[in-house]
Amino acid sequence: MMVLSVAGLDPSGGAGILADVKTFTALGVYPTTVITALTAQNVRRVGGVEAVNPDFVAQQIDLVLEEENIQYAKTGMLYSPEIVKVVARKVREYQLKLVVDPVMVAGSGGSLSQENMAESIKKHLLPLAILITPNIYEAQKLSRTDIKDENDACEVAEKLGKICPTVVTGGHLNGSDIFYKDSLKIIRDELLNSNNTHGSGCTFSAAATAYMAKGHTLEKSVRKASIFTKNAIEKGAHGTLNQYWAFKPI
Image 1: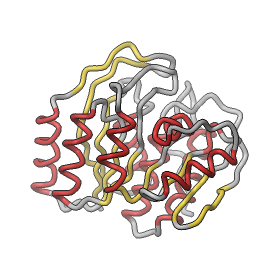
Image 2 (image 1 turned 30 degrees about the vertical axis):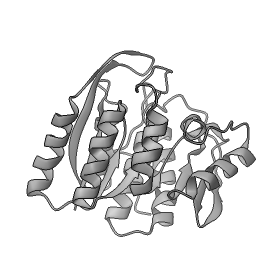
Image 3 (image 1 turned 90 degrees about the vertical axis):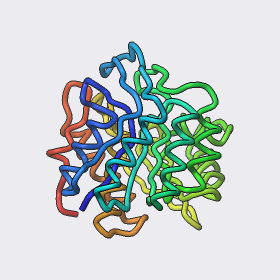
């Protein structure tokens, strides 16, 4: 079972491609990757970003899929509208089942995207996606709606859910994930008292992708990804998650 991550490289190992690879491996699916950008960052700050040429992003996708039969893919940091358009074109070409983690700002506050990324993601990727997994800040950018509480998050999840199934992740919502596909469901949990959250959004979206690739339904994959991510946060250290020790057969 193979899956694909199209995302940026975090050299600290906590987020991005490396977080996706660790999550896929922990959940028993084989990771393939396409790098969209190099970053200089750690768990506290982003020092710089060097984007990959969009044509080279396309070439990476083509060469991976030339040899491998991959159905499920996820995106993370895409950095520029040009890369978004290239990825969208390849998703259509290869008929990939796509999970979108709309990474625009690092957890430390550093920018991981150019301007107009929210509109580009909304226009080009969301209509192709089987799931989008924004945190509340990303959901605000995509919906142009302020989120002050859980009710606001529900409204935004429903709004984005009219484009594609949506889960507004609960790291900033007292631990509850807001899921919308045809109807609204709140996956209730408690907010963990932990600083080991660097890469939690990457881990959640990668876990959901892996569970779907293994044959679980969309809703069950979201619920299992939520459990997996919270376990990884609990077992993390040095500001990052521990995906390897998070997995329990569930």
